[in-house]
Image (tube, rainbow, N blue to C red; front, side, top):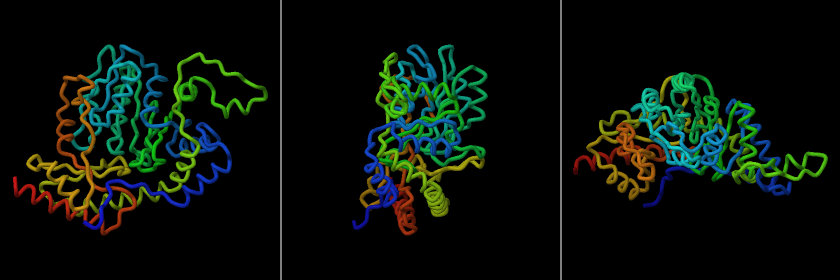
Length: 379
């Protein structure tokens, strides 16, 4: 095996190194510093919100979202079932109970009808998830949450650069949260962001993400010597200025990264569209998919594990899609989410990143077709 085609790979280089060097020269490497502030201002503009707060991860941003929205023990939050468990975990971190709602079979985002059916007198809000970056049905979800007096959070972990009816991901709910993990569309290796239009939520989140006090940069700008007073339990959820510098360089790359991955997704679609045992992902016509991952659905007759092992043996990295959360023992949920469970069993993520060459895309598709055909013939 000569070449291994990576499942995901960051696009980084000289511009990121130059940005890091600039931070080193400034002497401010810690979180919530001047470089972080510049990134927050640019990111808010990019996603169409008034405020952005750089965080240590999307999980920490989700936790802050729930705390600032007033979630407390005894509450229930309806959560899209097909998602990485950080979404459900964040509800538990706030002391509340996640109630999982099934997803649509085409976009894999939460089904608004399932959300409404999951609402009880204890429900205080809804977390929708942009599945692999494709935004959920926010107009329908907003109508439901407004009718019941609930908050709406957008888990936009994968959706930097996506749009819904012309509006950018991040601007579609009361609060949205992003991830800058190494497999995301723009990345600092780790990190995240909390974004909102609401002044009260942004102010509270900024306080909570720095142990419950104003950050050192804000205090340094005052004319006297303020001594912080701790009145509320806070956390260390800051993103370092080194990572913020990387993210500024990544924002410069975002348009090109999106264009490249959309071209790759289109090519995969052409190469795989006629295979009866492989279903390519669906992009809703009223939204733009950022293609954080490219996930195919295998026919029930195809053994996914056998396919995955064969692909890896031939140098094509792959993995499952994401989790059917209600099946995870931690949550103890008994209500079924059959669509999510089916996707969890049949989804396969194949290489998707902006560094893929045309030849690699063709190799991945040809190898997948050959392995699926072989697996199906040998069943």
